[in-house]
Image 1 (cartoon, rainbow, N blue to C red):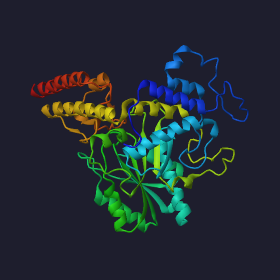
Image 2: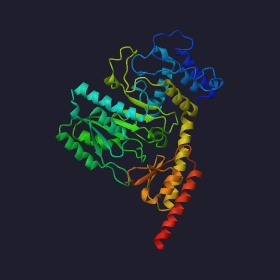
Image 3: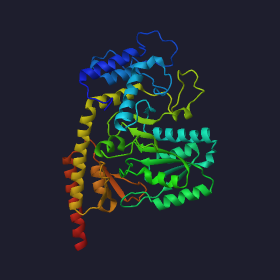
Image 4: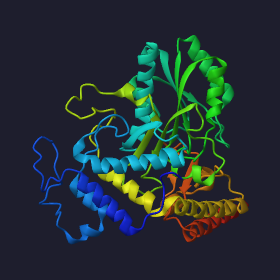
Length: 419
């Protein structure tokens, strides 16, 4: 690990205090030109005694604006202290987790995985336009039917076609034969440039797709493509549970990755992460943002520096070994649940290195759904699956209660059939 370590409470507090001292202080500094300020003092009392022991809350009250991309060019000097905190977070995630070379990437803390995924597709669309004089109708997105809804949302916003690739019902693997047929058909229809989104932990199943399935077909037909990994859910699980994973920046075909800190990392909502290789993010430079130092290269523009501080605090509270330990505990709980389902002959899907278990709907009653807040694949009455996500608050006692209730339900069904 180059950047990630475990800090004591005092070390974390001192680091955040130093960062805040390097920012503009709207309570004391004469700063006339910024359309920004601390949070309203009548509502958010910056002198509240509890704030001295809460660096994240201090940062929220200070209200730093992290507009821009602080790994690229200049940034607003008023918030340079907490911007450096954001860079430290990106170094940990890009270099220590996803194995990028130092200083080989750009990125920022986005408002979530949806924005980060749209950022990637926006960036690649412009990359093809800027470098190949591509027309929008020549560019297409490829992603599986299990992909997150942010991908069709991006297709709609950017007016691009989405090639939806089917997956197998039981194993959730993409159908490579259909993939090839769709790519060939798209090529005959004038598509020349392909934006691939491969999932590291799909929302419903936690399935991890093999990006080579996509790239091998595209390379077979000598087509231009860019590959994005949507690790919004799996990014804080899979690299730690599967030490042999090659889905990272050591694979030269991968150009960008989305991660969500407000899922597994338990950061406040609004803390997605976007990381890409150098030489790409400038394709979405907004030159019209002339009053912003360094201008802007993000969808959201203004964003809270406090979210970057929150992610930093979590990462440096655990350190790499503490985080690996946490993931191992969740894996053990997930494996326990799977063993119980197998003993009951209940069919389920689980990616071996993930902490999502998705159970066929035929085994789940409406009473179980209400009692345990199970999430359906679809809310339109045509649902085939319900998922259980073994998050930090889901302990074996909770899972035991569910299994007991499920066992009772199955027994009643058997008795009803035998009557």
